[in-house]
Length: 483
Image (cartoon, rainbow, N blue to C red; front, side, top):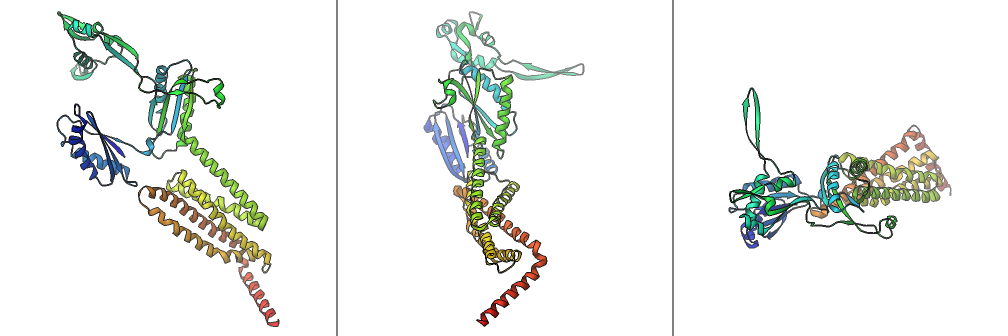
């Protein structure tokens, strides 16, 4: 989605709606791929939220939006500013939050430290958006005295214009002398509170009127518009040493699209540890208030832990029922299947998320079940003792190999249509279907490879095994005839 903001100074909400919003809504709604257009009219400005269909190419959608706005930029009445577009995506959501707090320093001092830390964090590769939340910025306030202004013959509007005019610098040309070119710069920016105090804002009785004669200039914190406090819960171990709430500033960090949140968060935390030795004072504490990289790592670790427990539990049950050979088949088939699946995802550029992890859990039962079918059939032939051990293994695999492969194709055919569902649900089903499809394909490859592996050592004896089976069948027939 994208936010389109248009300024119209002095206009009422009704004028903004009729002259800005309604024409823009008609234009934006006709863009191919736009699902909804939400608008809001306010005093002197308008904001429209353009929402695209799920699955649309983001870059192309933004290009279409910019083209339509540029094509119709002359349709607005005089006084309307050029539309400003601010794009939004899921990658704008912060993946890391660092909170700076202190028992001794206030929010104004913490804000200044946070801004320095933010500039260092932005140097880390794949860091996209950073923002400081809380604390007061440094500003220069000009508090006017109306009585002094009246006595010196100046007004607030004239003072504001003089401050803006003097806080400016521009290139004013150049000249050449003795084969050297010199660039001319006129004006300079205001740097200190004294520079602001010494500005001439008017003339009274043929004498200059300085700003410090009619106003008080203050260099310090701005008026707060948000508050951030930090404190521990009473069940936290650190509550005993820090039981109150303290002023704080939070730094939110976003990543670029496709980057690994786990790796970026580790790099940022390492950089912060280095800054504690040089930039962050000892009485300022840094707490991690949000870390999606750590959360993702914990979920993957938890999944692998439960997956390992499931494999060991199933292997133990199969060993009790069918012996160690059947358990070994199950124990090796599941990790091999998921290894091939993860390798395929690595090559195709897919990432791990909650949906794909759910799909991985979903196929665990099917993978284990198919492995048990082959192992159980081999175990049955071993118990029957009609063929030698090696020939019985090959015969058992050939007996159920094709039906289980066909069952895998059936499951693939059943879940494949999920990848073609459109809309928001389609994006969810697509990840699920991809995961299950690749898991089943990987298991299919494993099954074919396992059949081949079982066969390779015994290909030289395949003809003798067939002869023995025929002899065994003939003996059985002779026995039935005699009976």
